[in-house]
Length: 233
Image (cartoon, rainbow, N blue to C red; front, top):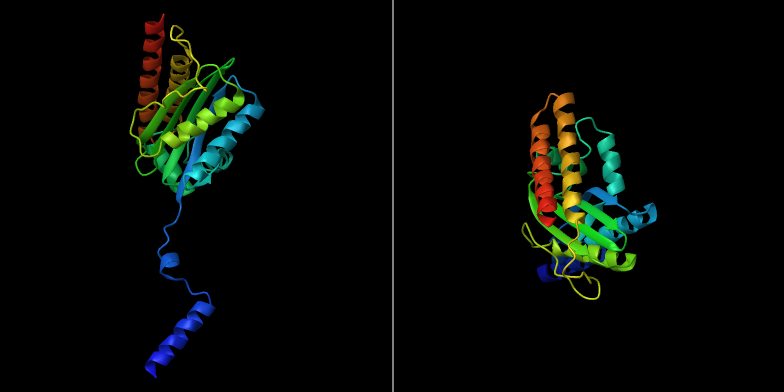
């Protein structure tokens, strides 16, 4: 009799759509926000294509994505969140506001048919870098450059700082004797921008720590780019 009752209850639960062991134990998707997407030397249309490619690739990796547009809008509505913050304590506040575990910072520059990418993943818990990919596409069509960007995003998973995406034909066809100055220029300009945002934070807010972190990080990037420019001449 008891077995019959138990069997009946189980059948009723299945009929009502009660979650089974696999459904109950399913883990939620990881959440990531595209914190910054800076493109230089590209049209708005190409910028939009890069943004769509990045978000699509993140979804393929299993992330629930907060788009760059949604991230910028959320930051603009909060006085305690700072635009231009890409690492350190200020990222922790952004991560909490967006409800994400990770954030993505993307810098891309184009000079004619040559592209350079710096893609960084930052942990929202402490604002520390988790992984970074620095790569270039020497002579590329836009479609090939988009493919290279997608590969850069994929390469972030399971990597540690720093690493480079191996060049794979036919996307990269850089002549050995030619050294592109895009990367050092990108680092120099980006460093100045980050340091400048830090100065603004220190000057305009009572909370100084995020500003000093940005100034220090931006200064490091600026000096790195400057040294690379001098060494390449």
